[in-house]
Amino acid sequence: MYMKCVGLLEKRGVRREDIAECVLFLQKQYIEDLHVTQCLKMVDDVLHKREVQHAIITAIELDRSAEQGSMIDQDLRRLLMQDAPLYGIDEVLAYGICHLYGSIAITNFGYIDKVKPGIIGKLNTHQEGVCHTFLDDIVGAIAAAAAGKLAHGNSRSEQEG
Image 1 (cartoon, helix red, strand yellow):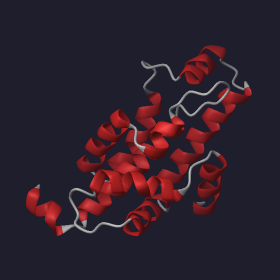
Image 2 (cartoon, one colour):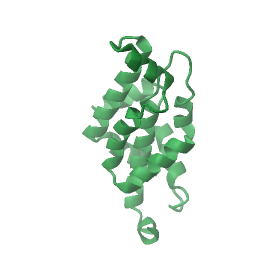
Image 3 (spheres, one colour):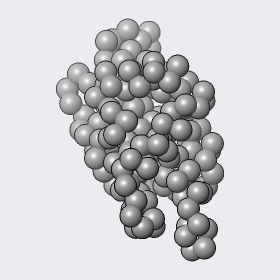
Image 4 (tube, one colour):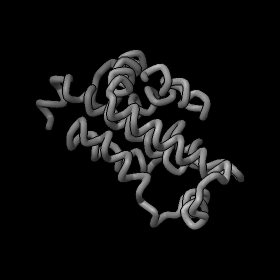
């Protein structure tokens, strides 16, 4: 399932390294000499969790179904294609990933969802005919969870927290 999810993400333009860059963005001010390879290890750890894999598959399938027009409910399709601001279910699915890594992952997700660095901003550009309503939040949640996992293992974070 891990390889399937990595492949699905890559087909949608998201590399593991892109997510690791977002982790670095979130944690570089807290962990001295943090390198993207450490962040990539955390991303891989998060991607190996079954709950995360299921969220990725669900998110990508919903986005693709909206793009292809294969959804039965056309009102839902319109909401997804517009990434309607009050829809919110995309964030709810992402919270499930964050909850696996505690309150730091949840607060990191809120922050990264607001500032949209790197790949998250790229996914959120709302190109005609492309739907990333769920994917941008799933990627943000993976980064937030990986940052939370990294922070939990960092003694400086514990001393400051």
